[in-house]
View 1 (tube, rainbow, N blue to C red):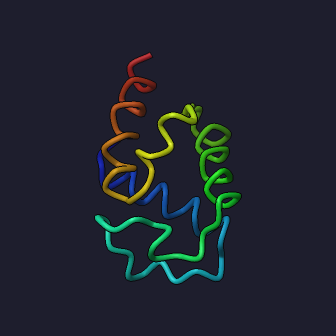
View 2: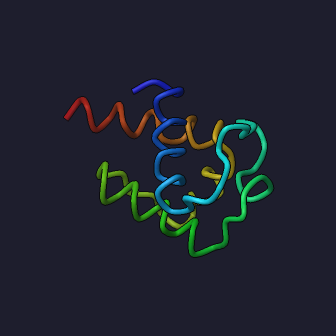
View 3: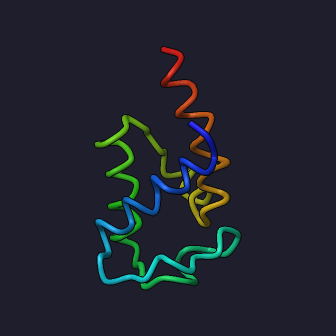
Length: 86
């Protein structure tokens, strides 16, 4: 999975969790919580959806890596590649 595909996947999850949010102008290098009305429960929902939909485990210590779309892609791309190679 490419970094762009990871970004789309995260945006798809956010669209399901927060359907009223406008995701058309998200800046990939700015924290998601600075751009969207996401609270801590929404963030946990994103982490749970990554596990449920894709089998990606994100330990609590790594939550900081999911701050922006770019950091999500940097963090998730190798995890998806590892899953694909299994």
